[in-house]
Image (tube, rainbow, N blue to C red):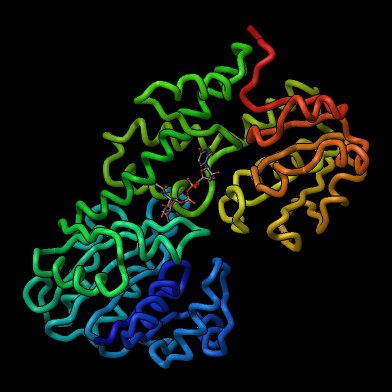
Length: 424
Ligand code: SAJ
């Protein structure tokens, strides 16, 4: 069996390599010549634990080849990005281009799978018509499927194999054909459905998470005003057997959860008031963080702030759509003297945000410490040691990453996000 994977990013590359190490012939295709050349020399353009070893093994086995155009195959997997445009509508340019690239090679009996996160109906209304330019008909002459990836960045290789896989066919035979392909490496359950349901499943999962985080963030704002500790209140509420409130923080980042809910708003703005409101709450959370600091300290102009953590979530190096960067930018705009440090990407250069390559450089001249990401390495900092490295005595903890009592004992004044001193 030969499989052609289009798009060699966070999903396509692990998928292509995993198929290859499971004995299939795989052609990995990317339109970016630098990515193709790099991979041909065993060099990766992205970081994910374990991926380099896997790609190199796949290349060495001869089962994976990387090139810039597709070729005839039994199956085609589209795993390109779906960003959104200024107006929050999905940008399907890459999905369209990949579908068009398959047309000249499509043959009777082939299987085409779309894995890119897409608005509902994309498989039926966008991909099928393009592929049918080949003269073949979806569901009659070739199989067509939507199957969402649901892997967690940082654990992609494990989750790719172990997670349950939803396979949505344009008809039953299509879903069955894709099941047989995924069964070569997926150990989780493979569940068959139709393609529009499969598209919705993916968007519903990430929207569920977004709405729940927005709820937690709104609770933090309420607690702040009412003068209670939201973290204590959440812990107590979560003792209820049917309640599980997530964690407030500086907002929602990454390229999935902060994007996908908009794909549902796009198809039916009149039905998605809650989803839109949740997006707006999470997008405005960096403003809330800065307002919270201003309410506590007064004007931030000229204040020297050590910003600790810039990644979009704990223990990853990914800075995409990071709310921590949004907070840092707003501090700069407010005139604060920012020194930001990201332990997973100490060399990162971010437009308009002054960064330093060592923790000590961020701490040294600071008067305020601001914890924005709960990286294990930052949470485990010893306040007694930190005190010897900085003149700062004011601590703002936006993720409840530090034990307030310990830091107070070490001589710091501590404010935690969502812990109000009672403005009412
Ligand atoms: N966050 C909070 N509070 C929480 C949990 C998360 O503020 O209680 C923030 C994080 O700091 C981060 C953002 O939300 O900024 C998203 O982080 P995440 O860990 O919830 O999710 P992602 O974006 O890394 O991965 C998600 C996963 N989806 C779900 O858990 C429903 C993953 O399974 C998907 O494959 C992935 O999106 C994707 O590619 O769509």
